[in-house]
Length: 408
Image (cartoon, rainbow, N blue to C red; front, side):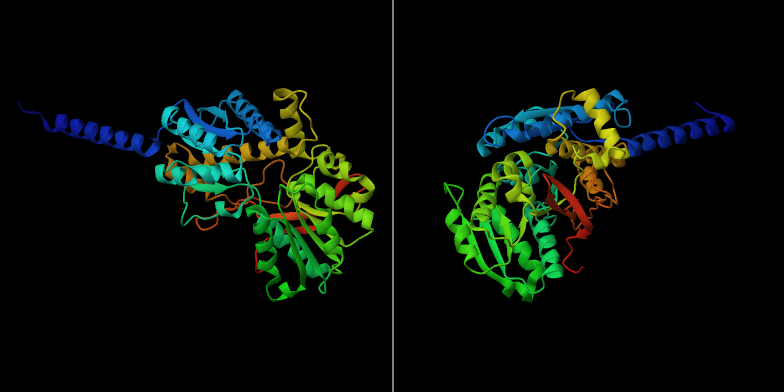
């Protein structure tokens, strides 16, 4: 069989076009398990029951946010299928549920799963399977370890980051401080103490006492008496809500009025400040990174308007004073940004690459000036906070945004 020169040219052009089209298709779309032309399957485990069930609203907020995105047409035409299981804040249950998500449901990634002990239990498994453990919902500093755990990334400012910011504030306001540190004798407490010393460095001698407590103790009054007796004029309170309230109350009874810096784990007005007494809580300092939806100062803020419109439509009746709603919204919006950046290259490796390439991303609900930034060597998305003071029954922000960098 012979072809004319023009026919051969036409066939060659067609072959070249077919090859180019095929290569283009391959270049355009790359999928790992959990992704199709129409769907992205995202897994999650949450404490919907058990001792940390107050955080369950985070998962519910994220589910509602993804529903809103799907109603708007999804991400590059793909709808999010969000599969969230209850692990009751129990590590063995977490292992079971995460295995189910990855091996049975075949999710693309696991997003914003909650809890330090629970997520520690699956960190090695995630990394062995090369399935993203993305934007983990805990403040432990261990999630920022791209060298040893390249498939794990945290989300909120770490406990160590907040402690560094407290140390910067102390050095600026009271360079000759006598610091008394009260901390939980666990990873949470020790992370904070390490953060303080990161910044204090040679000034660590300003710490006149370090007093730890066990979560099994019924009362921490004796520790507070002991710290007062050291003559400390700065009190760094690294305790969970029950003990933070006890500390504020006991300090008022003793009429001990040092500069009081308290972890943002315990800033709940309902769970800490009211039980301790609003008068006793007056002047307590902490640091924040999210807007408070119940604070009237944000009424005309564009980002807050979007958040409230979302609540009205997708979570009617939700308690606007619950900071977990704002947190869930912020995390979900950041996840959507990463998926948008990934385009049609929806491989697990590319999603981790995009999550590590966030540049000055300002979610609607972050405080003005606080931006999300990541890199291949820094897996801590939020490393800025603003100081705040408890005044007349509410938290008031003040001063500039402070970065946790040790150099400045």
